[in-house]
Image (cartoon, rainbow, N blue to C red; front, side, top):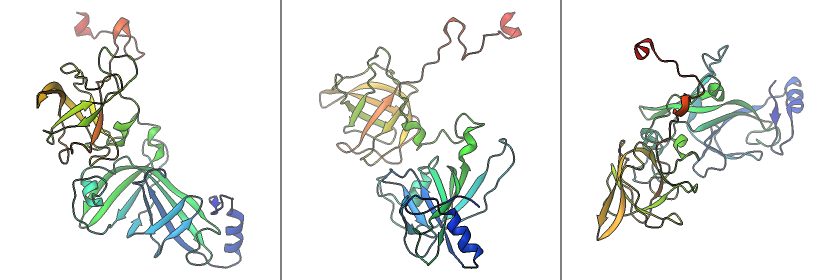
Length: 309
């Protein structure tokens, strides 16, 4: 039997086992956490008819959600997976990540690579999720999200997918939390460790973003042409494009109202233009590839027969 943790954080496995062997019945339900627990945008869902409080983690709210069977396979060539079907309530589309409905977010790829944790909760009386608590059922990341006749189909790959893959298979997406990690690269000629931050100013579109640098020491600085080419631009939280990012096609200087600014042209169009005075972002130069002095990623350089000839 899997370990069961009560609402107070204590191991209640033996209590649950004793309850079951006595012939008593438990009410079962599933708890779903999509996103990290400290993320205000995380989804706390349950397939039970009313909210459930499991104090070890938090409060889970009723939703029309069901899960398929956990597909377990031997070895790491084929990882375990779980399919979830979620039917959120219909809502109007907006131009802000904070108010966008789940169907809109799924279309944007917002849920891709979000962590998912699923528990089975054991209730001695209906609605009591604290006395006995819950046991872990599945954990992983969303590999794909699709919309089918009012349902969101979420395919969740086990956390073990990192064992045989360097990165998730859907790394290159319009919206991707992997792009928001602390791996940004400074532009050429800058070695102070500061990653340029910008305020959005007027004249933007879904493929063109104008910014005023706000980083201390570089306030209003205009960077060199194509310093950030093939890097990426990521919008900070608190704006209408929270977490949205795109690769940078080129960056140039632009003059608006007699003032010099940085202009970024993007490869992937944004879902809507950023809002001046509301949205902010940071940018990264392209990651350097060091092949100097025979350094080819830890492997010796061996010329092909054609190159040697």
